[in-house]
Image (cartoon, rainbow, N blue to C red):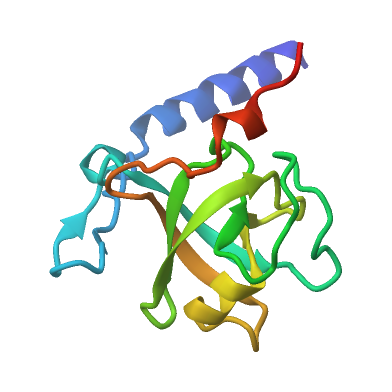
Amino acid sequence: MRGRTALLLLGMGFFAGCASRAAKPQPPETSSGEGGTKVTRREKMPRNYLGEGVASFYGPGLHGRPTASGEKFNQNALTAAHRTERFGSCVKVMNMENGRQVEVRVNDRGPFVDGRIIDVSKAAAKQLGMLDKGLARVRLYRCGSDRVSRVSVEFWAVPA
């Protein structure tokens, strides 16, 4: 019995060694959408690129309530919630479905729904043309000058 098992394993090893190997597939080239250039690697993406994903908007039920940064949420301002970007940083959101874009200031944390990359205010959603659907496929960039909000230092300073 042991001899047959050993012979069977030896035969399987022999045939596996003779099998041809599949070639490793090359990553497909994808269009970056700007000037028809091709981007195949993360290293070739612009330094201000933050990612792609689904954006949603929030507003009416939270208007006037405090955000994670401490300021009151205003659905009519160009603001957004992002998981990791620092408060006050400027993010350019580009709707990949219609090409519209808007610059928003991060003042909240979120989104807390899997598969979403950013939550924008109602005003930003209107400029992006996503009010009807509520969701849009977007690409995020840091703003060119990496502007920080004009909120005064007194607002951010914590009294001792």
